[in-house]
Structures are given as C-alpha cells and as structure tokens.
Length: 483
Image: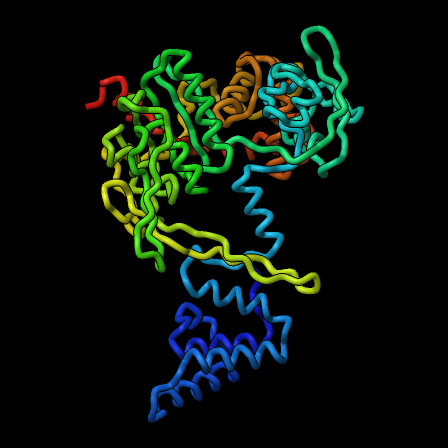
C-alpha cells in the first residue's frame, strides 16, 4: 500500500497514538511537530476532569485533515484498515482487480506450458479453452519460430518472453508436429491457470499438489480424482505445503471429494450473527472415504489449507505429515466503498468471521499439529559420484570428454535441461550454459569460458538440495513401511 507522506497525516497518526488506537505506529512518530502534538493530547486526556469522547475527537481531527487535504482520503482509509489486523487492508481499484485475477487464476497469455527437450522446446500441456487450444496447438508440438524468429536455440526464459505479450495482440508460431510444420496465429487473451497438478508414483500411489484454492480448484481436483480412479489408485498424497488458502467455497467444494456427503466441514462465526453458520460437504461420497490419505502440511499451509487439513484430521480420513501449520482461521470479505467518476475508490478486505473446524476447534493463532511431525532439510550437494570438475581455458560446442560429462551432471542436478547425460558439449549443454549466464549476469555466449567455470564452480560448492523427508514419510505411511 502507499505510505502517507504529508505532515498532516503523520500528525493525525500521532493523535491516534495518543488515544491508544494505533500502537503499531509508535515507532513511526518522528519530528518536533508529532512529539509536540502527542504531548499536548496526552496532557489533555490525563488531566481532563470529565470523560473524553475519543471517537468524536478522532473524527474531528480526521475531518480537519480531510477538509484541508482531500487528497489524503485513500491514505487515511488505508491507515484505518491497517489498524485492525494483518489481514484487513484497503485495496485500490487496481489491487482489487489483481486480487480477483489471483482468485480466478487468471493471466494473459496463450495457455501453454513449455518444456525443454533435446533439440528444442515442446508444448507440454495446453489449457482447455485457451487461445492455444482454440488455435489448434497440441501437446507435443515443438516450437520452431515465434514471429519469424528461429527459437530452436532459445532458452526457456527467452522463448517465454517471446510468446508473452499484451492482451488482444497476436503471436505467429510455427510448430513441428511429427514430420510436418504447422503455422498458427494465436491471439493472446486472459487464461485461467491451474492450481492442481497430479501424477502416479511407483505405479500405486497418487500424488496431488494443490498450490492455492481458487475458483478452478474443485474442477481440477475432479479431473485428478477421475484420473486416479481410472487407473485404480486408492492411496493418495495431497500436498498442501506452502498453500496460502484462498476462497472458502473452493475449499468446501474440494473437500466434497474426501468428506462424506452432508457432514459439516466448517462453521463460520460472524460478529453480528446470533447463530453459527455451518457449511456441509456437497460431494458424492455416501459410504466413507475412497482413498487412503496422507496430507502434507508445513508452516506455510494457511487458512483454507488448514481448513482442509483440519477436516482430514477431525474425521480421521488420513494422516497429517509435516510441520505445524500457520494458524490463520479467519474469513475476509470485501466491503465496497462509494465511488464516483471523479474519485474512483477501491474496497476494504475486512476480517468478518472466524471459522470453526468440525471438531469444534478454532485454530486462529494456533495452527494445526500434524500427526507425524517431520522437517525437511537442505543438505550439501553430493558430487562424489560425479566426474571431477576440471577447469580449463574454455569449453565449447563440439568438445568431448569426461570433463564435459562433469559439467552436464552438475547442470542437470541444478535443474537445467541438458538432454542426454553423455560426454559431448552439444547444443543442449550450450543452452543450459547460456541460461546460467543470463541468470548470473554474465555475457550469454553459451560457451563455458574460465569466468563462467569459476562462478559455476562456486555455485556448486555452495549449493544445497532439499531432502524431502515429508514426502518420503508419506510414501512410507501409505506403503505400510513407516517405522
């Protein structure tokens, strides 16, 4: 949010301080005027014989400030909103639109997930209904050119930048499908991005990552559920780590795939409501859970993710594994403000309610303890089984040998695509080197000169890789091998 900068606003903040209304701003009171004003108000409140109406005084100070400085209106609303809790905030019209896009999972593009393969880049997946899907691009199509530029030697970052652009503009693509080239003209538009990814591990266990609960999540979970059932999967890991939550209705609908029909999944407690408001599972399950579940949570699992995890725990539908969750059990709703054409106003996202889990627990400020507490850790990158890294004047395309293999092995474990792990400095390794050079600010030649080698060696020496002990434990639990 914008930081108020005018002196009158800081004086107003000091007035609020003196009334014990905004203690969080105590450290921001600076300067002679603020200190003087604060001292005057303190003296008034301490020595006034009768009861002082602090709200009336606050309104008078704010009214005077706005009468002389009407441009402070949004700043003062922002200050007032910030004084409640960390989740109440004033959103400008642009910020309201951005938040709506986040919940609606929207972005401008063509709706293609791109993956690097040997010899180029491929459209890995196409979002249904996206501009790419409408144009006829299919998964597996290989990018040859974008707007007439050959992209076979582009890094993923470069290719992505070429494909992106403003909404309504066109991008001309030439793709290779099998042995045939196909030309497409695609109009960039708002695309609904996914929040769910899924796969089968070891042929018997499903894995589903829910990154956020947005408007598309229930439909995406339905697709994952259909996929797992079609493949006979009855054991499932649901990964909610670092999921910040999202829309409560999205969470309730998603829980319908796991919580039997009709059971209460959440009760919301509003300040001005005499009765609690329960929401129930709307799923098709009538005779108990379909999956044997393990749910991964951590300190970044918040709000809706905690609501999901709490239902799994309270109804004993699975095992919670990981670290204690964040502890946000409140519900925010937008409060619209009167706008005019001359002065467009945003909205206030206000904490309106607290939610209660099926077992009767309020978790705000507490979080949820997992059934199995286990922390991930980062360990030093182990290169003992790799070829030794040998420094020389330069490595370039066409070079061969064990030292080239050493480079490929290290680039691969760092997440760069290098194609086949052989001892040939080919185009794929050159592109990986080029991408590394771009990211560290070196000239992106694709050639491994001595400066690049030294910096790359330093990165390898300092690298730590994540040991996902939480996922390992979930697999053990579902396989029945946990100790």
